[in-house]
Length: 101
Image (cartoon, rainbow, N blue to C red; front, top):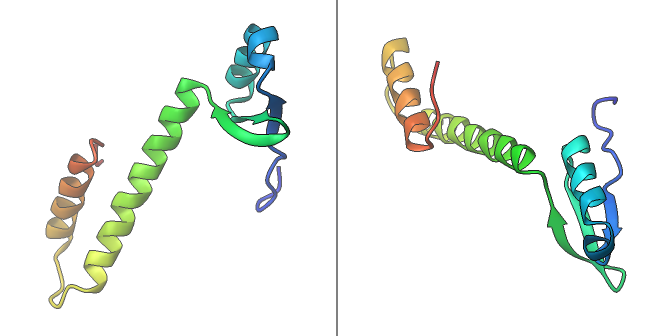
């Protein structure tokens, strides 16, 4: 898929959970995309495979950790050495429960 082009969201009526539960779950697992469940034609809930959810959560945590480090670095009055910078990044990643390589 070209960069900047998003796929159309998967949309299903919430009644599919009752009538086609296994198919809905298989679709969520196969596509690794969230499925928007509608109630009376209005988006009401989102169903997502657990592995896809965990991957998205890890990406978000990593993004926030890097963003926090960037903000901290921008407003730091004195420069840091590479070792100090790596140590700070490792601390931030540790706070978020991630490993810093």
